[in-house]
Amino acid sequence: MTNTLVTPIKAGSINAKGLLEEARSAHENYLIKQQESDLEKAIECYVDAIKADPAMCESYYRLASLLLLKGQITVDGALEQCKTALSLEPKNVNAHIYSGYFLCLNGDLEEAEKEFKIAINNAGANSARPRLFLSKLLFSKIKNHSNTLKDTVKFLYYLLSGSMMIMWDCPSIKMFCKFLANDFSVFSYKTLGEAFEKMKLFPSALDAYTKGLEKTSQGNLFYQKMGDLSLECNNIEASLEFFKKAHELNPSDREVLIKLATINQTYFSDNIDETIDYYTELLEFGIDMDKIYYELGHLYLNKSDKINAVSAFKLAQIIDPENPYYNNSLAYAYIKAELYDDAIEYYQEAIRLNPDAEWTAIVCHALGAIYAEVKGNYEAAEATFNAGMVLDPNNVDIQLSLGDMYIAQNEIDKAIKTYCDAITVDPENFLSYAKAGLALWEKDYLEESIVAFHKSIELNPNFEIAQNNLGVVYLDGIGDPKCSVEYFKNAIDINPNYTLAYFNLGRAYQAIGDKALAAEYYQMTLDLNKITEEMNEKDIRSRIYELFE
Image (cartoon, rainbow, N blue to C red; front, side):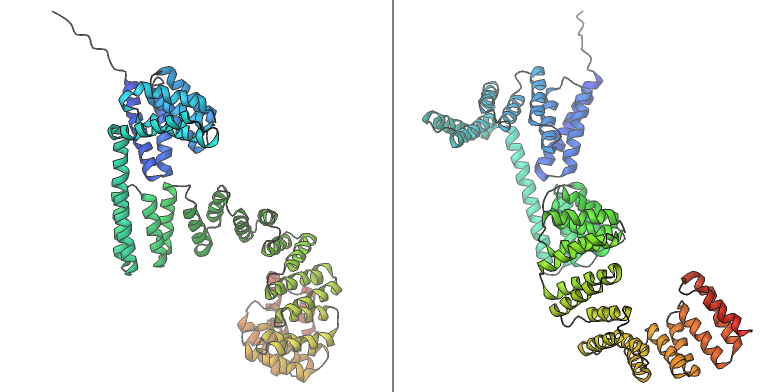
């Protein structure tokens, strides 16, 4: 009786074959649909296959190609992987093809030609692919190095023979058919969805894209289509989710990242960290980096992260130093960081570049405010404000700031004239009347001051400062405390935390002779002032003591 001996198969080898098959499938999917998730899966499975069976040749050269694509190894590293594969299977056709390909990338065309010829000899009738690779190499030599008749004949021979033999190269034909079938399905669902979009049949378009997502391997494409459609239908949250899914499938798609960053920044202002992450990813592409740093600077400002804001705007300005907007934003970030000399430098540069008169006038306003309020350099501030008004004579805000500067210098007449000029430019600006009223009060022009405050209140009844100041004119200027009460109460109704209005109302009741109400409002002033710290506590207490002396 003859015994048949069966060699047991190692469990590790079976597991390695399964992993290799998974890797091939993911690798194939990546080649068809170019999605990062398939690439990552293929790499992971190839690595696991090598761990399960280090003697499996195919895993090495295929893994090398993907790691090189990801930038995780150099061409020399890929060639080392091919050497390992060839040491395991010296006659492996694909290992020689990959080795020849990597040698081409390394510029070693002579050695690459040898590898392709070995692959052709080992493959026999199935040598279409190495023949075509070799024809490409020979064409490169003809174009860049030499143009001999021998090289030309060799090129034509391998090109024509490879093209003929590709007809019975089963793996290539199989892959071609998969590409063709997938491309046709993608085209069909994409065209159908776009047609529905043009007819404004948005639910039908979404349905077509959803089916395309299910039936084809182009998830990245259809998620983008669904994201764009949702955005058009103003379904912002759904749009964001679709783009996130597209990004998960292919993190290297720059257009998706731009849309994610823009949607987050525009509609989800609380998601600052997430938006920063998207812009940071965009920096890796090395495209429009100045614009990305500019957006990052604003995001960091929103987070009150002054250091990173300055850094981001500075990087944008270094890339494009002639951009006035970058200089302006960098100056603003320096103000937030209380680095005023640096801010002045970049504001001056933005003004020098002067892309637009109205915009530059606004920059002049900001620079003038630093000179006046921080540096106390009123001469420079006045010159800068005046330059801004020359650029934009209709900029009322600059005129008001110039008037405020004159008030700070106790040049009341100049202040009154400036505020009146502002009123001439914009007769509907309530703030101009309020400031003019205050300056007129300082000069004891009581009737004119009352007219100005009334006009300010008429234009904006909810402006509590004008209400309070009008009350002060009636109380301290005209000597009519009963009339002043109405305006102090109005100010408190508008702003219940207006400490000074409570204090003035207490003064009004004290002048009327109603000590109880005066004491009540002084006490309210005292309590509120502990929070607002708007007044000197001693002044409030001294008023309370006066009531009972």
